[in-house]
Image 1 (tube, helix red, strand yellow):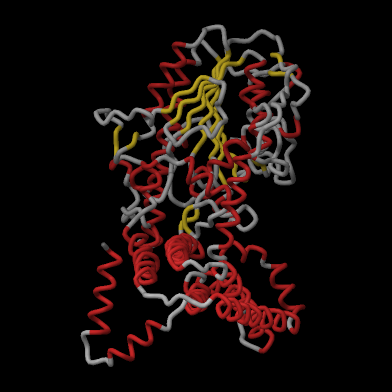
Image 2 (image 1 turned 120 degrees about the vertical axis):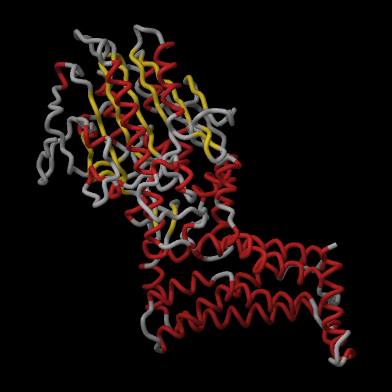
Amino acid sequence: MSIQLTKNILHKIFFKTEINQSTISIFFHKITITHIILATSLTNTIVYNVNFWKKINKDITQLNLENLLFFISLFSLMTLLWIILFCFFTNIKRFKLFCSISCILSSAFMHLNGVGIIIDAPMITNIFESNIKEVTETINMDFILHITTLGIFPSILILAIPIKKEEVQRAFFLRLYILLTFIFITIVSTSINYKYTSFYLREHRDIRFLTVPFYPTYAAINFFQSKNLKIQSFIEIGTDAKKISYPRKRKIGVLIVGETARSDHFYLNGYAKNTTPYLSTINVYSYKNVFSCGTSTSYSLPCMFSFLGEDDFSKIKSSNSSNILDVLKTAKVKSIWIDNNSSCKGVCNGHESINLRDNIDSNSEFFYHGLYLDEVLIDHMKNMISRANKSDDLLIILHPLGSHGPAYYRRHPEIFSKFKPECRSNSPYTCKKSDVVNSYDNSILYTDYFIFKVVETLKEIAKTEEAFMLYVSDHGESLGENGVYLHGLPSSIAPPEQKHIPLITWFSKNFSFAPERTVDLRNPCLNNRFTHDYLSHTLLNLFDVKTHIYNPSLDLLRSKCDNAGRQPF
């Protein structure tokens, strides 16, 4: 229907006006696939890669012959890649369909790149592992208008334009001529300016992330290849794990895996606004220099629970070897995962778990904007603790929704809208930066309250048991710095806002450590640089687990302080 409608509109525009009908008719009848290939390739290079050109323009401050040749070589290469992508089509219908799909996808990639979202393999994983609610929150009116204007409308136009069938031999030589012309321009301009071109591309490797649709296509191929890799055998590590025996009570620990929290927006870490009024009233330790393994939940979660370390981590390796929950299980420490987020990303496989978002009750007091507020986790935590075997040490992992964007205002009840005005939109880049920050800070304020309530619950438990709480975020968030929003940029180019995360601990007054692992909880190294690599080894210490894979130098509580010195509470 839409194609026929477009044809009728074009017909009325061109053939029901004073324009010479025969001239227009001749013009349309002369259009071939080769003409469309050239026109589309040039347009796509300019339009859909506008973020690519903006980045280069930002890096190059002056226009001279050297920079001009650099622009020409890149423009020619990008156009050449588009031509190669299209030139093997001879069937008109298939070409139109492929060209239309590429327009829609490229317009989507262009829009996402424009707000700081790079489509790489981890981001594709995030998309596939997110639920419908999370995905729809990123689809806003700006996105729809962008896709319609630069994707759907050009696609309908391409489908509607009549294309003349080409004589095969003529089409072959014409396309070959076009290809050779752009190859020649690319080689000559690059060769003359090779030193500068190679230097720029070597020093700005991140520029490849903005090439549309080439990098997203490359990332998609990598993603599906990794999905098809067959795991040969599961590697069990820490099989010698056992608890160190000494007089102590049962230990109950709560690990809160925060979502999208930035260290520099916690008042405990020196932020100007008081975003942590509740935690400021109790004995907690806040580590100020902690960095995440990745910039997305799907990558950071498996990484922070593995023993591979950030430098050697891959999702394939981690899924093929024991993680900290497996090793704790070997040492008779039970783990229970309670989720109010998308999922545990495979970390809790083989362990007791519940995802509260599988069956959302709209009548719940915590139901809010189609999801649950994070307080819903606390009742389930209490229930799991009461049900657990009273002789087992227990680790409860809470996975809250935290500050998951882009609709930060939906992550907290209205009573926590302290910082105003706040952005009440799922398109943060359409709001004032200060309003976006206020909205985000209100979600941190609610996170502060949530952590506080978890600690208050553990204080009651600590009357008869030993207890601890450890909060650490999976990654940070960009809030408009340098025009970048949300998270998920490749680690190599991610700004510190997406990796600098909070880590907060609390221990009951009666909490003890094995004699051979003396820890002074009064003097933690709060200014040391830590990473997610420390989590697994710290948990082994907290539960007094002895195993050959335990590394005291990666234990948050036993690390030696650097030059910053110890910072007492």
